Amino acid sequence: DPSKSTELIESSGSDITHRLICSHKTPAFFIVMIVYEGGLILVGCVLAFKTRNLESEFNESKEIILSMYDTAVISTILLVVANAAVVYQGQKRLLFSLGIFWTSCFASCMFVLPRMMKVQKQRSPPSTGRYAMTAGISEAAQREHDASASSRMAPVRESSTENGENEQTENP
Image 1 (cartoon, rainbow, N blue to C red):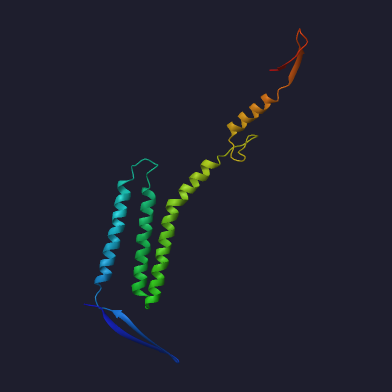
Image 2 (cartoon, rainbow, N blue to C red):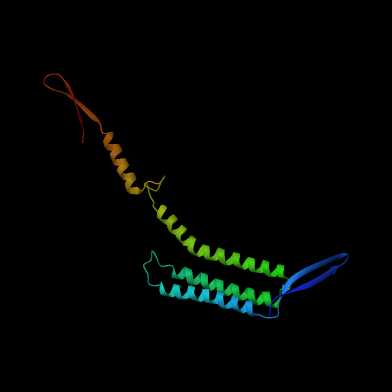
């Protein structure tokens, strides 16, 4: 069934809207779209399953499977709502745009937030006491700095030698 140009005339009060829309009576494109998107989700789940045993640096299977699950659930909800309740093309586009926005944000958060939290945790490890993290200096580096500063500030003792010259030595 080829697509045909259909006239749609709407009148509300004194306003008359005349539209030409592309319409068809076959669900072929819809079925092809569902099969294609379902296949992509299935491939994503298979890849997540196959990568579950990689080293932790490369293992993102949990994030991938949660993103695929979210995409499948949101797509199913959108398809049911769009075909059952939404009448106008603009409403469908808005609904699908919101669904795509949600799944994109969710997937991005699944991959980015854990890494950001890990970096934040590595930057500021919990420390207590006198040598707490300040200005990016670790506790060990602060102790070394304090030790070298105290050795430079050691008192100097002057003593005179046999020929009358003054000699300076550091006290241990």
